[in-house]
Length: 156
Image 1 (spheres, helix red, strand yellow):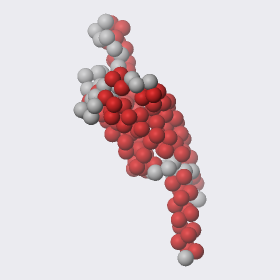
Image 2: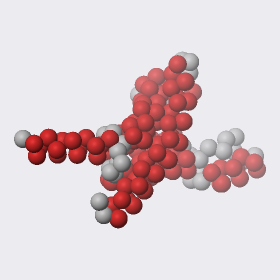
Image 3: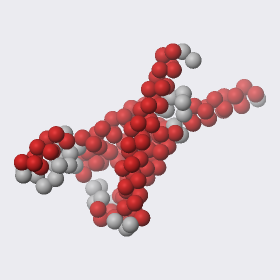
Image 4: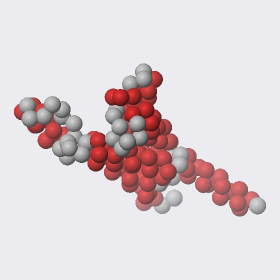
């Protein structure tokens, strides 16, 4: 493996585990909301109903992020996360400021009842979008499955 390829694969591993690990914690909270029947807390940003909305967001944030962490079906697993974070940033938080800093300023000045912003959703959307294009890299289950498939093909 070339040095550049090694560095790229290590970088993708760090990206997958880092951003995926943070998103899994958000997803686990949504899984707990489902377990506790708290469907109305998430809302219904695109008209699917609060129950289905929560289940789909929990699946994207917990299940798909977990798949990205281990590098299994990475490009496909990243897509629901990108969709969910796009809905969060541009629909659910459409009226909120772009940055957490501005949201905090508005909240502490009394101009807003919340310090919600688009920034957290965008900070997840961007790396998962990148992973949709790059894939998982060499240190992943995807790569392991590809190498096994290639080995079987050469044996035949």
